[in-house]
Image: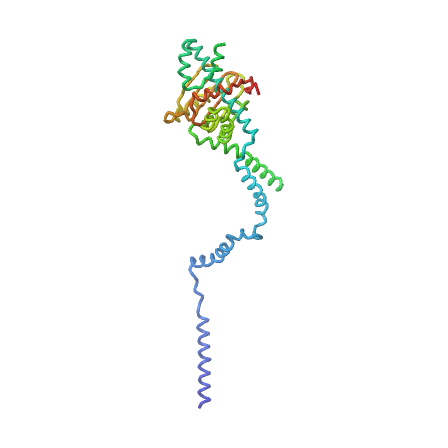
Length: 151
Length: 184
């Protein structure tokens, strides 16, 4: 009796297994929606990018093509910083600036004198003084100009 | 091939960097109301025979060095921001010279500069402008173009014309034919 029971149970289990196998074979693979597939496919790439975003900061991770410009940029940056620093002018620079200012003022004077002469040509000597004296309030005619006009 | 390309790029970068301080000085002056952009003078007159651009830092140093011997000049230089001079030698009135002077004059008038002197003849064009704000002269611009010479001067800063006249007297400089100090 016991043996028959055992045989029945074993037979049932085998039948179940056969039945389950048959059902499994009948199952088809459900196709995922296209949008979901695309999203899933993107994930490995995005993960790689996240990992690589700052990897160029790690020495040894530079792409080889970037090494030459990177090395060239270093002395250029140093040079730029040095050149951008306000340079203390030397005594020679200051003396040159002094002479440049003198020349600049001489040209102002020259133009003032030339303008005065033009006024004289147009208005005549007497009127020139009255016009020029008024202008002198604004334009720095110098004594040198006055000396020249009397010659 | 690649090396020569990199070398060319490096040379271009170094050249650009060398020009930075000069450009920076000119750029610093551009912010002042007394600054004048004369436009492309070289395109009309060619290479300048005299080109002067003295910035604020040098003016400050000249001012401090002049303090003992000429306090009035020192005071004037201290209040100036920049002095720019461009002189061109010309052989006859250059093509486009009159138009350039009129163009710059028109722009200056539009920007609030006051025309002080105008000489308008066939062989001579002279314009003197002043930028006056609240009764204070902040810039003087002189353009004088004639047959043999074209002079463009821009004095930037707080200027008292009478004081400028007195300082100019003390400089007492004679220009030779090339526009250089004939004494020095």
